[in-house]
Structures are given as C-alpha cells and as structure tokens.
Amino acid sequence: MKEDYLKIIFELGGTQTKVSNKQISLSLNVAAGSVTEMVGKLVKDGLAEHTPYAGISLTPEGIKIAENLVRRHRLWESFLVFKLGYKLQDVHTDAEVLEHVTSDHLMDHLDDFLGHPSHCPHGGVIPNKNGNYKEDSHQVLADAEDGQSVVIDRFIDNHDLLTYLDDIELNIGDKLTIINHAPFEGPIKILIEETGQETNVSFKAAHYIFVK
Image (cartoon, rainbow, N blue to C red):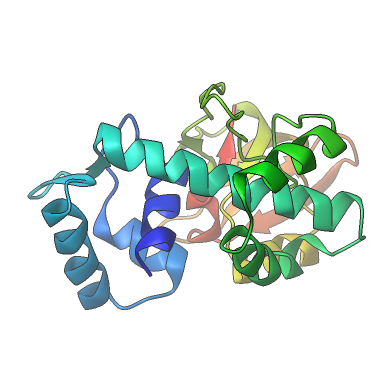
C-alpha cells in the first residue's frame, strides 16, 4: 500500500537522507521486487525521488502526505497503548485501520484528549496539526562504536522487531554501552547501564533501533 511506503520512508529518515530499497524491504517485510515497483510509482506520482545506487527520499509533497499519515497513525498508537493498555508490538494493525477512517476533526479532538503528545510509544515523533515537529535521531545502534555510550531514542514500527525487543527487555530511554560488534554481521553485545545486564542484539535489529 502506497501509504505504508510513505510512512516507512519518513520513519527511516527519507525527509533528509536517502533510504535504500533494502531498508524498506526489511522494515515492511516485503520482497525487493515489490519495493522497486512501488518506488517507481511514488516517483511517477511526484512523491519521491530515486537516485540509482544512493536511494529514495521524499519530495515536499511526499513529506506533507507522510506527515499527515504518521500523525494519524501515531496518535492512535498512543491512545491504544496509553489508554487501552495494548502491548506495543500488538498496536500497529488496529492503528492502521483507524488512521484511514478518522476525520481531521476527530484527530484534533484525539490530540487534545491525549495532551498533545510529541512522541508515540515506540519513540517516533508526532507532527502537530500545523505539521511542526522536532526531527528524529537517525543514528542506528549498528553504527555506534565499541565503547560508546548511547540512549535508545526510538524503534522502527515493525511487529517482529517490537516482539523481539520485548523478549530481550530493551526499552526507549535505556542507556547502553556498546561492548563489541561480532564480525561477519554477528550480534552486537551491549551493557544496559541501569541493570548492569549484558545482552546481544542481532545485527538486523540493530539497524532499526535509533540512538542518540
């Protein structure tokens, strides 16, 4: 679905940098060929720009649409998690349905009811109704250096990833020290500073955990 691609390109940093087809494919759990086809449609519709071997970024029109979709989706995620007690990894599907059947009027009231949250439960920014927001961090855990201390800022909104992170008890706001990167795309060993616990994060997951 076109909207899913706009949201994930936004989430991966496509308002400022180039996002690869591979990143989109992994994040949405779709085949590489499907990504290539949809990227072509987004470019044709004037919503994205594609530079061979560099990646995809959103045009101003694409950013505007993505911001509106992200706002709707993340406000509903916030409501479902904080008011109805959903588990984070279970919230995406229902938020996806609700975002498409909600009027602007209802979104404004939902925003008021929630107290105008700036971020959703998995750390993603929520644009306000005027389209203003603070840009997310785009440094991924995989790129942090051995010995560096970082704070988990947000997670990609992917069910399998969020289930995995729940299993290894990694949360937004956790302070980590990077112990080492195993060679050949092996796991990254980290120390969770609050608990003193060491754990491994898979190479793939570490590309969808953003830190600052």
